[in-house]
Length: 408
Ligand code: CTP
Image (cartoon, rainbow, N blue to C red; front, side, top):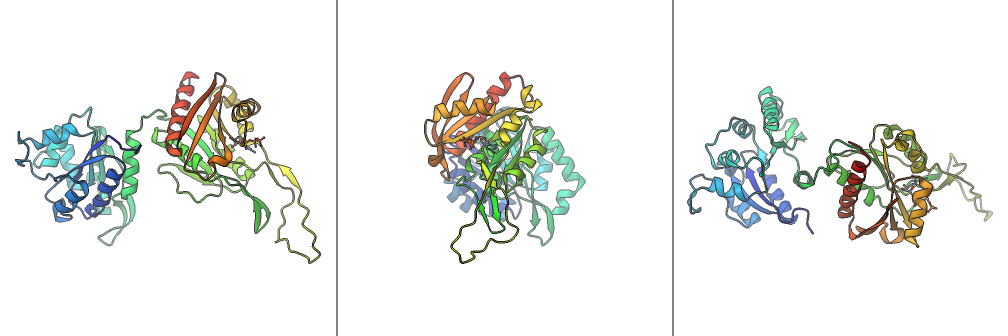
Protein backbone atom coordinates (compact mmCIF):
# COMPACT_ATOMS: atom_id res chain seq x y z
CA UNK A 1 0.00 0.00 0.00
CA UNK A 2 1.49 3.31 -1.13
CA UNK A 3 0.62 6.63 0.47
CA UNK A 4 -0.86 8.14 -2.72
CA UNK A 5 -2.45 5.03 -4.25
CA UNK A 6 -5.53 6.00 -6.28
CA UNK A 7 -4.78 9.74 -6.20
CA UNK A 8 -4.69 11.71 -9.45
CA UNK A 9 -2.66 14.91 -9.21
CA UNK A 10 -2.51 17.68 -11.77
CA UNK A 11 1.01 19.05 -11.41
CA UNK A 12 1.19 22.62 -12.71
CA UNK A 13 4.56 24.19 -13.53
CA UNK A 14 5.00 27.95 -13.87
CA UNK A 15 8.08 29.96 -14.85
CA UNK A 16 11.03 29.69 -12.46
CA UNK A 17 14.37 27.97 -12.09
CA UNK A 18 12.80 25.66 -9.48
CA UNK A 19 11.20 23.85 -12.45
CA UNK A 20 14.26 21.58 -12.34
CA UNK A 21 12.98 20.24 -9.00
CA UNK A 22 9.55 19.53 -10.51
CA UNK A 23 11.08 16.60 -12.42
CA UNK A 24 12.07 14.87 -9.18
CA UNK A 25 8.76 15.81 -7.56
CA UNK A 26 6.84 14.22 -10.44
CA UNK A 27 8.81 10.97 -10.03
CA UNK A 28 8.28 10.98 -6.26
CA UNK A 29 4.53 11.45 -6.59
CA UNK A 30 4.38 8.53 -9.01
CA UNK A 31 6.58 6.34 -6.80
CA UNK A 32 4.17 7.09 -3.95
CA UNK A 33 1.31 5.67 -6.05
CA UNK A 34 -0.24 8.76 -7.68
CA UNK A 35 -0.96 9.32 -11.35
CA UNK A 36 0.30 12.70 -12.49
CA UNK A 37 -0.96 14.95 -15.29
CA UNK A 38 1.51 17.73 -16.02
CA UNK A 39 0.29 21.15 -17.19
CA UNK A 40 2.92 23.79 -18.00
CA UNK A 41 2.78 27.52 -18.69
CA UNK A 42 4.75 28.94 -21.60
CA UNK A 43 7.26 30.39 -19.10
CA UNK A 44 7.76 26.99 -17.43
CA UNK A 45 8.70 25.50 -20.81
CA UNK A 46 11.64 27.95 -20.90
CA UNK A 47 13.10 26.19 -17.85
CA UNK A 48 12.33 22.49 -18.44
CA UNK A 49 11.03 20.77 -21.54
CA UNK A 50 7.60 19.17 -21.87
CA UNK A 51 9.49 16.13 -23.25
CA UNK A 52 11.17 15.59 -19.86
CA UNK A 53 7.90 15.96 -17.99
CA UNK A 54 6.05 13.67 -20.44
CA UNK A 55 8.69 10.97 -20.06
CA UNK A 56 8.56 11.16 -16.28
CA UNK A 57 4.77 11.31 -15.96
CA UNK A 58 4.16 8.85 -18.80
CA UNK A 59 1.41 11.16 -20.14
CA UNK A 60 1.33 13.90 -22.77
CA UNK A 61 1.87 17.32 -21.21
CA UNK A 62 -0.72 20.06 -21.70
CA UNK A 63 0.28 23.67 -22.24
CA UNK A 64 -2.34 25.45 -24.29
CA UNK A 65 -6.02 26.16 -23.78
CA UNK A 66 -6.41 25.64 -27.52
CA UNK A 67 -5.10 22.04 -27.39
CA UNK A 68 -7.29 20.13 -29.84
CA UNK A 69 -6.34 16.65 -28.51
CA UNK A 70 -9.43 16.87 -26.32
CA UNK A 71 -12.56 15.94 -28.34
CA UNK A 72 -14.56 18.82 -26.81
CA UNK A 73 -11.53 21.16 -26.91
CA UNK A 74 -11.99 21.89 -23.22
CA UNK A 75 -8.79 20.71 -21.60
CA UNK A 76 -9.37 23.08 -18.65
CA UNK A 77 -12.65 21.33 -17.79
CA UNK A 78 -11.61 17.74 -18.50
CA UNK A 79 -8.26 17.83 -16.71
CA UNK A 80 -9.57 19.59 -13.61
CA UNK A 81 -12.58 17.26 -13.23
CA UNK A 82 -10.34 14.17 -13.03
CA UNK A 83 -8.02 15.60 -10.36
CA UNK A 84 -7.96 14.82 -6.64
CA UNK A 85 -5.81 17.93 -6.24
CA UNK A 86 -4.02 20.54 -8.34
CA UNK A 87 -0.47 21.19 -7.16
CA UNK A 88 1.34 24.23 -8.60
CA UNK A 89 5.07 23.62 -8.09
CA UNK A 90 6.83 25.89 -8.70
CA UNK A 91 4.32 28.71 -8.34
CA UNK A 92 5.84 32.03 -9.46
CA UNK A 93 4.99 35.41 -7.92
CA UNK A 94 3.28 36.33 -11.17
CA UNK A 95 1.16 33.18 -11.17
CA UNK A 96 0.09 33.76 -7.55
CA UNK A 97 -1.05 37.27 -8.54
CA UNK A 98 -2.99 35.78 -11.45
CA UNK A 99 -4.66 33.13 -9.31
CA UNK A 100 -6.03 35.52 -6.77
CA UNK A 101 -7.44 37.87 -9.37
CA UNK A 102 -9.17 34.98 -11.10
CA UNK A 103 -7.29 35.66 -14.33
CA UNK A 104 -7.64 32.90 -16.91
CA UNK A 105 -5.56 33.69 -19.97
CA UNK A 106 -3.59 30.43 -20.17
CA UNK A 107 -4.52 26.79 -19.62
CA UNK A 108 -3.17 26.45 -16.07
CA UNK A 109 -4.82 29.57 -14.62
CA UNK A 110 -8.00 28.81 -16.57
CA UNK A 111 -8.04 25.32 -15.07
CA UNK A 112 -7.51 26.60 -11.52
CA UNK A 113 -10.44 29.00 -11.94
CA UNK A 114 -12.64 26.35 -13.53
CA UNK A 115 -11.95 23.66 -10.95
CA UNK A 116 -14.80 22.54 -8.70
CA UNK A 117 -13.60 24.41 -5.61
CA UNK A 118 -15.18 22.02 -3.06
CA UNK A 119 -13.84 18.78 -4.47
CA UNK A 120 -10.54 19.74 -6.14
CA UNK A 121 -8.20 21.41 -3.66
CA UNK A 122 -5.47 23.74 -4.88
CA UNK A 123 -1.99 23.48 -3.34
CA UNK A 124 0.74 25.95 -4.22
CA UNK A 125 4.48 25.74 -3.67
CA UNK A 126 5.84 29.26 -4.18
CA UNK A 127 9.33 29.78 -5.62
CA UNK A 128 10.99 33.14 -6.10
CA UNK A 129 13.81 35.50 -5.19
CA UNK A 130 13.86 36.57 -1.53
CA UNK A 131 12.98 40.22 -2.30
CA UNK A 132 10.03 39.12 -4.42
CA UNK A 133 8.91 36.80 -1.59
CA UNK A 134 9.21 39.53 1.08
CA UNK A 135 7.44 42.16 -1.05
CA UNK A 136 4.16 43.34 0.50
CA UNK A 137 2.35 42.56 -2.76
CA UNK A 138 3.43 38.88 -2.60
CA UNK A 139 2.62 38.59 1.10
CA UNK A 140 -0.79 40.20 0.49
CA UNK A 141 -1.44 37.80 -2.39
CA UNK A 142 -0.41 34.86 -0.26
CA UNK A 143 -2.81 35.81 2.53
CA UNK A 144 -5.64 36.29 0.04
CA UNK A 145 -4.92 32.99 -1.69
CA UNK A 146 -5.15 31.25 1.68
CA UNK A 147 -8.38 33.10 2.48
CA UNK A 148 -9.75 31.91 -0.89
CA UNK A 149 -9.18 28.30 0.22
CA UNK A 150 -5.83 27.43 -1.38
CA UNK A 151 -3.21 25.61 0.69
CA UNK A 152 0.11 27.45 0.52
CA UNK A 153 2.87 24.96 1.30
CA UNK A 154 5.48 27.48 2.42
CA UNK A 155 8.99 28.12 1.12
CA UNK A 156 12.48 27.04 2.00
CA UNK A 157 15.35 29.23 2.99
CA UNK A 158 18.95 29.31 1.81
CA UNK A 159 21.15 29.91 -1.21
CA UNK A 160 19.15 31.02 -4.26
CA UNK A 161 19.92 30.58 -7.96
CA UNK A 162 20.31 34.38 -8.27
CA UNK A 163 23.24 34.24 -5.82
CA UNK A 164 21.35 35.79 -2.90
CA UNK A 165 20.49 34.00 0.34
CA UNK A 166 17.11 34.09 2.08
CA UNK A 167 13.51 32.89 2.03
CA UNK A 168 11.67 32.02 -1.16
CA UNK A 169 13.26 28.82 -2.49
CA UNK A 170 10.80 26.14 -3.48
CA UNK A 171 10.60 23.36 -0.88
CA UNK A 172 12.60 20.26 -1.77
CA UNK A 173 10.74 17.48 -3.63
CA UNK A 174 10.74 15.18 -0.57
CA UNK A 175 9.28 17.98 1.58
CA UNK A 176 6.56 18.64 -0.98
CA UNK A 177 5.83 14.92 -1.22
CA UNK A 178 5.43 14.77 2.54
CA UNK A 179 3.11 17.80 2.51
CA UNK A 180 0.93 16.30 -0.24
CA UNK A 181 0.67 12.96 1.61
CA UNK A 182 -0.14 14.80 4.86
CA UNK A 183 -2.75 16.92 3.07
CA UNK A 184 -4.78 13.81 2.21
CA UNK A 185 -4.75 12.42 5.77
CA UNK A 186 -7.95 13.03 7.78
CA UNK A 187 -7.49 15.88 10.28
CA UNK A 188 -8.51 13.78 13.30
CA UNK A 189 -6.38 15.73 15.79
CA UNK A 190 -6.79 19.25 14.37
CA UNK A 191 -5.73 21.83 16.93
CA UNK A 192 -4.59 19.26 19.54
CA UNK A 193 -1.15 19.33 21.17
CA UNK A 194 0.61 15.99 21.27
CA UNK A 195 3.77 15.08 23.19
CA UNK A 196 5.67 11.92 22.21
CA UNK A 197 8.74 10.29 23.77
CA UNK A 198 10.83 8.03 21.55
CA UNK A 199 14.03 6.01 21.34
CA UNK A 200 16.29 4.61 24.04
CA UNK A 201 17.91 6.53 26.87
CA UNK A 202 21.64 6.47 27.58
CA UNK A 203 22.87 6.25 31.14
CA UNK A 204 26.51 7.22 31.58
CA UNK A 205 28.99 5.00 33.45
CA UNK A 206 31.85 7.41 32.73
CA UNK A 207 32.43 10.07 30.02
CA UNK A 208 32.98 7.45 27.31
CA UNK A 209 30.78 4.50 28.33
CA UNK A 210 27.16 4.00 29.12
CA UNK A 211 24.15 1.72 29.22
CA UNK A 212 21.48 1.86 26.56
CA UNK A 213 19.13 -0.49 24.68
CA UNK A 214 18.20 -1.53 21.16
CA UNK A 215 15.18 0.74 20.67
CA UNK A 216 15.46 2.44 17.27
CA UNK A 217 12.87 5.16 17.95
CA UNK A 218 11.11 4.34 14.66
CA UNK A 219 7.68 3.75 16.18
CA UNK A 220 7.74 6.98 18.19
CA UNK A 221 8.93 8.97 15.19
CA UNK A 222 6.15 7.41 13.07
CA UNK A 223 3.58 8.37 15.73
CA UNK A 224 4.89 11.95 15.80
CA UNK A 225 4.59 12.09 12.00
CA UNK A 226 1.09 10.59 11.97
CA UNK A 227 -0.11 13.02 14.67
CA UNK A 228 1.32 15.96 12.69
CA UNK A 229 -0.38 14.71 9.51
CA UNK A 230 -3.63 14.49 11.49
CA UNK A 231 -3.40 18.22 12.21
CA UNK A 232 -1.84 18.19 15.70
CA UNK A 233 0.95 20.40 17.01
CA UNK A 234 3.58 17.83 17.93
CA UNK A 235 6.61 17.87 20.25
CA UNK A 236 8.91 14.87 20.09
CA UNK A 237 11.30 14.20 22.97
CA UNK A 238 13.90 11.89 21.46
CA UNK A 239 16.62 9.82 23.08
CA UNK A 240 19.89 9.28 21.19
CA UNK A 241 18.84 8.16 17.68
CA UNK A 242 19.91 9.44 14.29
CA UNK A 243 16.47 9.43 12.63
CA UNK A 244 15.41 12.53 10.67
CA UNK A 245 12.89 14.79 12.41
CA UNK A 246 9.41 14.36 10.91
CA UNK A 247 8.41 17.48 8.99
CA UNK A 248 6.53 20.04 11.01
CA UNK A 249 7.39 18.38 14.35
CA UNK A 250 9.29 20.18 17.16
CA UNK A 251 12.10 17.94 18.40
CA UNK A 252 13.92 18.02 21.74
CA UNK A 253 16.97 15.74 21.93
CA UNK A 254 17.79 14.22 25.30
CA UNK A 255 20.20 11.56 26.55
CA UNK A 256 19.37 10.13 29.96
CA UNK A 257 16.07 9.21 31.60
CA UNK A 258 16.44 12.19 33.90
CA UNK A 259 16.90 14.56 30.90
CA UNK A 260 13.83 12.99 29.32
CA UNK A 261 11.82 13.49 32.49
CA UNK A 262 12.78 17.18 32.62
CA UNK A 263 11.86 17.75 28.97
CA UNK A 264 8.53 15.97 29.43
CA UNK A 265 7.70 17.91 32.59
CA UNK A 266 8.36 21.18 30.74
CA UNK A 267 6.04 20.24 27.86
CA UNK A 268 3.30 18.13 29.34
CA UNK A 269 1.43 21.10 30.85
CA UNK A 270 0.92 22.35 27.29
CA UNK A 271 -0.26 19.01 25.90
CA UNK A 272 -3.61 17.31 25.36
CA UNK A 273 -2.20 13.88 24.55
CA UNK A 274 0.97 12.16 25.82
CA UNK A 275 2.29 9.08 24.01
CA UNK A 276 5.24 7.40 25.76
CA UNK A 277 7.00 5.10 23.30
CA UNK A 278 10.53 5.60 24.68
CA UNK A 279 12.41 2.58 25.97
CA UNK A 280 13.53 4.35 29.13
CA UNK A 281 16.37 2.60 31.00
CA UNK A 282 14.97 1.23 34.24
CA UNK A 283 18.25 1.80 36.12
CA UNK A 284 21.24 4.12 35.89
CA UNK A 285 24.71 3.78 37.41
CA UNK A 286 24.54 5.23 40.93
CA UNK A 287 27.87 7.06 40.75
CA UNK A 288 28.95 7.84 37.17
CA UNK A 289 32.69 8.57 37.10
CA UNK A 290 33.89 12.03 36.03
CA UNK A 291 36.93 10.53 34.29
CA UNK A 292 37.27 7.39 32.19
CA UNK A 293 37.52 4.33 34.42
CA UNK A 294 40.89 2.66 33.73
CA UNK A 295 41.98 -0.95 34.02
CA UNK A 296 44.49 -1.12 36.86
CA UNK A 297 46.11 -4.39 35.76
CA UNK A 298 44.81 -6.33 38.74
CA UNK A 299 42.05 -8.09 36.79
CA UNK A 300 39.41 -6.57 39.07
CA UNK A 301 36.22 -5.29 37.37
CA UNK A 302 34.63 -1.99 38.39
CA UNK A 303 31.91 -2.55 40.96
CA UNK A 304 28.93 -0.79 39.42
CA UNK A 305 25.86 -0.16 41.50
CA UNK A 306 22.56 1.13 40.16
CA UNK A 307 19.62 3.30 41.19
CA UNK A 308 16.14 3.12 39.68
CA UNK A 309 15.15 5.80 37.17
CA UNK A 310 11.91 7.74 37.60
CA UNK A 311 8.94 6.23 35.76
CA UNK A 312 8.10 9.12 33.43
CA UNK A 313 4.79 7.73 32.17
CA UNK A 314 3.48 6.66 35.56
CA UNK A 315 4.36 10.09 37.00
CA UNK A 316 2.57 11.96 34.21
CA UNK A 317 -0.45 9.64 34.47
CA UNK A 318 -0.71 10.61 38.18
CA UNK A 319 -0.78 14.36 37.45
CA UNK A 320 -3.94 16.35 38.09
CA UNK A 321 -4.49 17.12 34.40
CA UNK A 322 -4.35 13.43 33.49
CA UNK A 323 -6.64 12.49 36.36
CA UNK A 324 -9.31 15.02 35.42
CA UNK A 325 -9.25 14.07 31.74
CA UNK A 326 -7.47 17.12 30.25
CA UNK A 327 -4.47 14.99 29.30
CA UNK A 328 -4.89 11.57 27.65
CA UNK A 329 -1.93 9.25 28.34
CA UNK A 330 -0.89 6.34 26.14
CA UNK A 331 1.80 3.88 27.21
CA UNK A 332 3.72 1.26 25.28
CA UNK A 333 4.86 -2.10 26.53
CA UNK A 334 7.68 -4.03 24.93
CA UNK A 335 7.29 -7.61 26.15
CA UNK A 336 9.01 -10.83 25.24
CA UNK A 337 6.12 -13.17 26.12
CA UNK A 338 2.47 -13.33 27.33
CA UNK A 339 1.76 -10.04 25.59
CA UNK A 340 -1.90 -9.66 26.54
CA UNK A 341 -1.55 -10.50 30.24
CA UNK A 342 1.59 -8.41 30.65
CA UNK A 343 0.09 -5.46 28.78
CA UNK A 344 -3.11 -5.56 30.83
CA UNK A 345 -1.15 -5.66 34.07
CA UNK A 346 1.12 -2.85 32.92
CA UNK A 347 -1.87 -0.65 31.97
CA UNK A 348 -3.21 -0.90 35.50
CA UNK A 349 0.20 -0.45 37.09
CA UNK A 350 0.94 2.69 35.08
CA UNK A 351 -2.58 4.06 35.50
CA UNK A 352 -3.12 4.89 31.81
CA UNK A 353 -6.38 4.60 29.84
CA UNK A 354 -4.66 3.03 26.81
CA UNK A 355 -1.62 0.77 26.63
CA UNK A 356 -0.12 -0.49 23.39
CA UNK A 357 1.62 -3.85 23.62
CA UNK A 358 4.19 -5.27 21.25
CA UNK A 359 6.81 -7.99 21.26
CA UNK A 360 10.14 -6.20 21.85
CA UNK A 361 12.59 -8.48 20.05
CA UNK A 362 10.26 -8.58 17.00
CA UNK A 363 10.04 -4.81 16.68
CA UNK A 364 13.34 -3.20 17.75
CA UNK A 365 14.94 -1.72 14.62
CA UNK A 366 12.32 -3.19 12.25
CA UNK A 367 10.23 -1.14 9.81
CA UNK A 368 7.07 -3.06 10.55
CA UNK A 369 5.35 -4.43 13.62
CA UNK A 370 2.00 -5.58 15.05
CA UNK A 371 0.24 -3.93 18.00
CA UNK A 372 -2.20 -4.97 20.68
CA UNK A 373 -4.30 -2.15 22.15
CA UNK A 374 -5.43 -2.68 25.71
CA UNK A 375 -7.98 -0.44 27.42
CA UNK A 376 -10.74 -0.78 30.01
CA UNK A 377 -13.06 -2.26 27.36
CA UNK A 378 -10.71 -5.07 26.31
CA UNK A 379 -8.15 -5.70 23.59
CA UNK A 380 -7.93 -4.70 19.91
CA UNK A 381 -5.41 -6.16 17.45
CA UNK A 382 -3.72 -3.98 14.86
CA UNK A 383 -2.23 -6.55 12.49
CA UNK A 384 1.32 -6.41 11.13
CA UNK A 385 1.98 -3.41 8.89
CA UNK A 386 4.58 -0.69 8.42
CA UNK A 387 5.20 1.43 11.52
CA UNK A 388 3.74 4.48 9.73
CA UNK A 389 0.52 2.61 8.89
CA UNK A 390 0.29 1.35 12.49
CA UNK A 391 0.92 4.87 13.77
CA UNK A 392 -1.92 6.28 11.62
CA UNK A 393 -4.29 3.60 12.93
CA UNK A 394 -3.23 4.26 16.50
CA UNK A 395 -3.81 8.01 16.03
CA UNK A 396 -7.34 7.24 14.78
CA UNK A 397 -7.94 5.10 17.89
CA UNK A 398 -6.60 7.87 20.15
CA UNK A 399 -8.80 10.45 18.38
CA UNK A 400 -11.91 8.29 18.94
CA UNK A 401 -11.08 7.73 22.62
CA UNK A 402 -10.27 11.39 23.36
CA UNK A 403 -13.49 12.53 21.66
CA UNK A 404 -15.41 9.99 23.75
CA UNK A 405 -13.75 11.46 26.86
CA UNK A 406 -14.99 14.88 25.85
CA UNK A 407 -11.70 16.53 24.80
CA UNK A 408 -12.45 19.19 22.18
N1 CTP B 1 8.34 4.26 30.83
C1 CTP B 1 8.63 5.52 31.32
N2 CTP B 1 9.63 5.68 32.23
C2 CTP B 1 10.32 4.62 32.69
C3 CTP B 1 10.03 3.33 32.22
C4 CTP B 1 9.02 3.18 31.27
O1 CTP B 1 7.99 6.49 30.90
N3 CTP B 1 11.28 4.81 33.58
C5 CTP B 1 7.22 4.09 29.88
C6 CTP B 1 7.64 3.65 28.51
O2 CTP B 1 7.88 4.75 27.65
C7 CTP B 1 6.42 2.84 28.07
C8 CTP B 1 5.90 2.25 29.35
O3 CTP B 1 6.40 3.07 30.38
O4 CTP B 1 5.39 3.66 27.57
C9 CTP B 1 6.30 0.82 29.62
O5 CTP B 1 7.66 0.63 29.46
P1 CTP B 1 8.33 -0.79 29.69
O6 CTP B 1 9.81 -0.64 29.59
O7 CTP B 1 7.67 -1.84 28.83
O8 CTP B 1 7.85 -1.09 31.16
P2 CTP B 1 8.57 -1.07 32.51
O9 CTP B 1 7.90 -0.07 33.38
O10 CTP B 1 10.04 -0.93 32.35
O11 CTP B 1 8.17 -2.51 33.07
P3 CTP B 1 8.93 -3.93 32.99
O12 CTP B 1 10.40 -3.63 32.98
O13 CTP B 1 8.47 -4.58 34.24
O14 CTP B 1 8.44 -4.63 31.78
